[in-house]
Length: 133
Image (tube, rainbow, N blue to C red; front, side, top):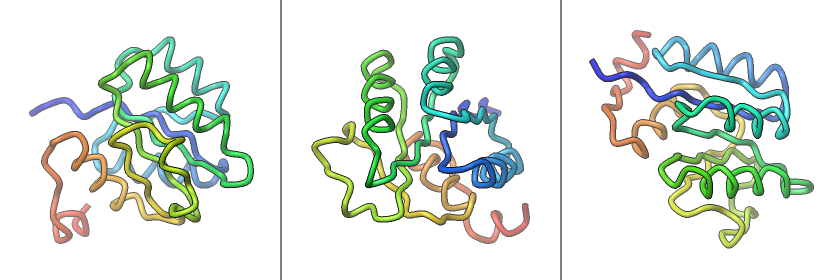
């Protein structure tokens, strides 16, 4: 069986990080949770196996998050980026990296699993298999 991607999660808050991380772990993903954008920069530099970056962007002050995604993609053009945002249609396309979907918050971990599967070209369990987990 192929190794699951290592997901770096940069959540809005600690509780979201815990719930999402536990959900992804339940689906067999390896997950790192960054407490801040600065922590995420450090993890991206020290953990080259990270292949998916899931980052929350707050419309009011999302410039650090958007810069993190751009830096991550510049340093590793193959890294997959998923934005999470409460109001995705207000996130300017010109500020996002290319081919990076945006998942509306709040979301359930199985929704994130589906998006990761789609952008990673990996098998995505159907809803019946997801319910069984």
